[in-house]
Image (tube, rainbow over the protein chains, first blue to last red):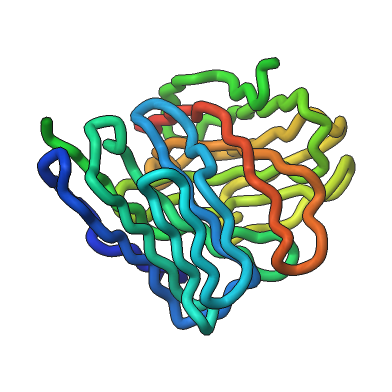
Length: 110
Length: 117
């Protein structure tokens, strides 16, 4: 079983639509990172959230860390084709170990 | 600036063969990690290192060994490959982490695609 579950696993939407990806766990994390991965490449960091309830914005992307630091969400406003990719959350436990979520594969259709 | 470089990029092995995957970083990072990525399971940590000469087990260490003889290199070895080890392997590095909640971004290589027949 995975420590972090992401939903949905697959998402296909039209350009211009909004979407939310969820990252859930029963464990507490000291911080949580979101990555995007393109085919044939390694993940690239988008954001790190540290404080319970924290909200960070990166252009059209809004990231929120749950109050109890067990879950997080990623909201994309007015999706573009360039947003297509695999989105991964990663929670940090003690000793700088990161536990990655199961991933959400997003396809934005023109 | 190359960042994190993984070699080889692709490899096909027969069951029982051994091989070593090499990861090199030029960012003077203290921490290095080896992950495997399988469909529907995200990335799972195999082993990691917090400095030259030190290694530690991650979530799925069985069947793998690692060494960090030089700060810039982190090697992942498969002594006797099994079909269950078919996967995409990613190496990552980061600056030394601070206290809890000050995690550093991980910089990833482009992966090694390993098939074991």
